[in-house]
Length: 629
Image (cartoon, rainbow, N blue to C red; front, top):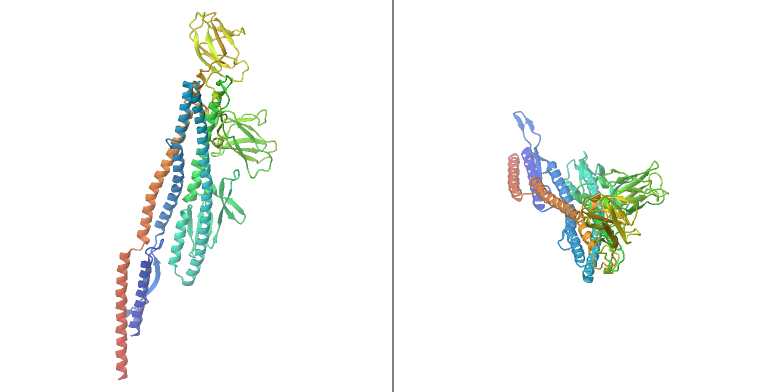
């Protein structure tokens, strides 16, 4: 009877454990990250009898967590990828909306200025047209300021979000390390996996993967090691490392992420990928940096082209034109590791060659070198770096400091601050130089077919620019200016003198005379602004390969393409994430129908075992009664 009772009791205990486990599953049907549990049963060791072996019942060998590590890792990886693209796309959309607006976007803003310029060219003496153009110039400058301010605001927001996400990573890492400790203690005490603690740790790992890409390595004691970046240990057993944010080597307003170690901090910014942090850093170093530099290049190009043409013209008061726009200067940043003194002086000298790149200037072995900050490619320089003979590269002049020492390094940003510093330099609309300061004429006695072509100013600083000059042809191929030495005339090539350039079309005859004189009374002259309007649509930037309108179109298109790619990738990854989560839930999630069936099964088994106990009790009582008689 003892064997019968013992067998029945083992069944009672086992199915009671099954009921408990099923009840626990049902109770946690809404608990995030909970993995349903199942009891694993095993028969007890049978007892030998002369006529065979007789079983002695059942035991619960373990309570197993229904868990598939491969499916879990897929779910975690999809979360990492989705959160990265979601962070990137949300920020990209803001820049795209900023630049592509049909009313306040880049194209619309420049078009309004161009239309106002054309209105002045059509009516150069109109004070109202001039006032409108000056107003549109102020609007253009203000809009460029606004774009730059918005981009700078996004950069500041990124710093805050990176800091916040880094703090969350630290909190999660500490919590994972604490759970490692509890799991090791619990497993050592019972020899069985503490399922609920394992689920809690997996939830934390899922949350961590939403912040940054992680890799994990399970240990024999039940703990798990967590690595980020290129293998930097975030959690090792019961110890958690700490991430900190700090200023960039060159720019204190640009945060980098470092890991604290026993020997100091290690910069891990470039190795962090995935998750919110990866998306934020990828956006900052790629799209945002490019958008700021491209905007600055546009500001430099617009200001330089307009100012060049203004300088070649004459205003309504008869004075030579002056610069209309100013932009922010080149930004030069010292490395925090420099031991020398001074910083290089860098100025823009050729807007057509200014690029959207940042540069690193370094002194090594007594020799200065320049390289692209993004690609690391060397950039050729001419000159010696002195004030009398500065280095020249990509439209920049660089004068290096005398106090620099080997190892000193500087970052040069030619365009990043240009747009935020853009402004209009005068308020008087009569200062708009729509006219050319010189005018050409043809002598009435000329006999050849030569006629006046384009007259332009090539050197507005030439002191003889507005002095009356006479061009006399001694033959169809020879001429002199103001009785000077004879010069060869080549058809199709301009005559250049006193800072102006004049094209003669047709074939002049010997004795033909042409004149160039001051245009001081040319109030209605519009030739300079006609040239400016034409130049706005002609190649200028990128070493004369891209027009301003083309550059704007390129910037808007690039931002739009990057934004669309990020949106498509985000939406696709969202679907992948949903599928991965569904696959995980199908394995580990609680199914109430299944649990209800288990509940009935265990209940019936428990009741049957109870009947066996009752039979054992009645049999035992009968046996006792028989002996008592």
